[in-house]
Amino acid sequence: MKRLVKWRFITLMAVLMLALSGCGKPYLSTLQPAGEVADMQYGIMKLSTWIMVVVILVVAVIFILVLVRFRRKGNEIPKQVEGNHKLEMIWTVIPILLLVILAVPTIAATFKLADVSAGENKNSKALVVNVRSHLYWWDFEYPGLGIVTSQELVVPTNEKVYFNLKSMDVKHSFWIPAVGGKMDTNTDNINKFWLEFDNKKSNEAGNLFYGKCAELCGPSHALMDFKVKAMPKSQFDDWVTAMKNVKKAQPATTDLAKQGQEIFNKSCIGCHAVTPANNMPDTARVAPNLTNFGDRSRVAGILPHTKTEVKNWIRNPESYKPGNKMSGKYPQMSEEQLNALAEYLMGLKVQQ
Image (cartoon, rainbow, N blue to C red):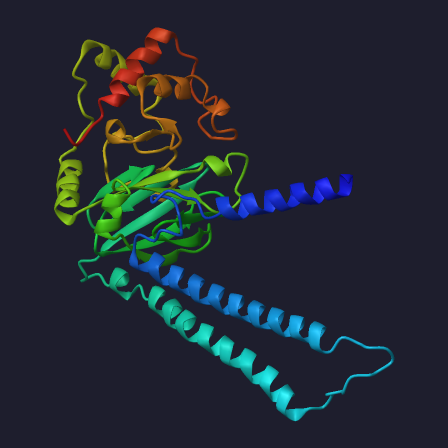
């Protein structure tokens, strides 16, 4: 009886896991593709799954027929078929045909996804983004636009965006599940690929997708998230214009924010930038760029975007992202200082 209960429990958990594996949000699920790359990858996933299902069904049917029809009766030995050339040719040719059926679209998609020539052509108008991964945050540079931002990638919909991937410390992996990927970011070479964000699917997802690090990189690997804002080309151009107009640090607008700006200039400016300058070398990117911090949707990529969470993060970043490089880099602050600093940071907006 105990063994029966145990097997029932295992069966129930297996069914639940199978059911939950199909759940997902449109901004995070690979099963709800929101771009050309994701569509191609999803199509190959479905093709390979159908091939496996058909093979399993055929084998299962043959197995059951053999059990029923050729079950042993007494001492009678069934007819032996070793060396049957026809059978051997059938079970050799069929797997080859199945592999060809799967290989042709897979190889075609691989070559198409590997074509980044437009992103390498200096005369091309294609949008190129240099992605830099750090412990545990992301940096996005638009070399053709003179813009650098962090933690939130902003892209236009319905056009290819070309990515150059590199890591500044250990191996990470850049992945936007709903749109496509993933690809490693290495320290010794630059990986390249492209994505396209579908406008209709982006609207269904609220124009916001989640990005993840897909390579185990340290104690806060699971918290190394970033957000992707996908918007129509006209809105993206407005965002670019707004970012370019930030030539110097944005002035504080309230007395409390002015106090926060003074604290920032004394304690934070050594690591964080508040202008989207494009002249920062890789080694200078010690901490996220905060130019448009007030426009973001998350604090540190994981917390709700509120002043309370800003203060909580500054107060003790180690409790939220163990092993991050911000811990212990500045003196402890009073509640008044935290209030002022949070007020200043939340006022850093380029889209009014």
